[in-house]
Image 1 (cartoon, helix red, strand yellow):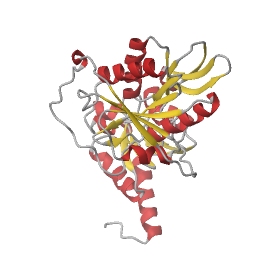
Image 2: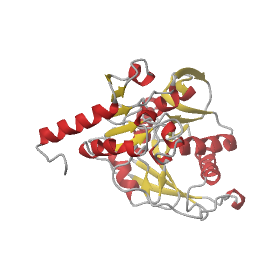
Image 3: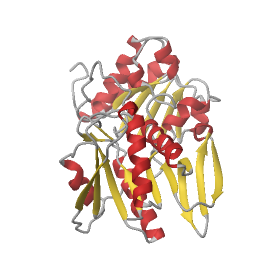
Length: 329
């Protein structure tokens, strides 16, 4: 059945936070093309699949099965998507433009010989495809016109806000069993890291990041305290991880985590393009920096030109005063 097939990312039984964005984008594109939208799960069934589809108003769910697909593997996933696109004559196959999403569709595109446009912010069809995609880490938007019967698309992460639907939806499930080439299975899992429960850097409503200006690993203690008061998470720039002050898991940026919090507080961060790419989807940005010409200061909606080592403790003290808490507790 032709239609818009949206591939959902998942790991260790949990769907990626970007799944809502992907389903929202697919729902809008399906309405524009007057094509059915089919949510696609690769690998063993997950109990939350139907619930997720119904939350975002997707009436059709498809499970791609193969005995070899137990964990994520770009070659296997890519081959499964390629065979799906050919078998169903898919009009569009799409996902979110995360590292994994782009990796899978690149594999599938090469195997199915279908054009792939990555990191789109706009995708429209008026006799031909009119797309806008991010280049140079998001510092440049490129308009693309493409004529093709089928297309693979990834939407830039955080380019679309997830929008659940209010109407009741009943999702019907079906499955396809493949017999993929065993030579495609090239992954060897030697260790498995348990996913962090609760709020993560990519899902936090408040993120407080420190850069080289923090000065040391110990300098992050006030940022941790402020994040705790605001129920947020602490991030950092690449300079911090290069200095060994924090782990790469905390890095915000093009080669780290891309975030979209309600509030982003950048402390002592110059704002190099690699960092800005990861933070630019933030709804509100406050920069604290002694340099009024720093890139982060000029891009932020709000700025405090002062020493973060004076500003952050003062903010903590004021929050505690207003809450009537003991500053030492």
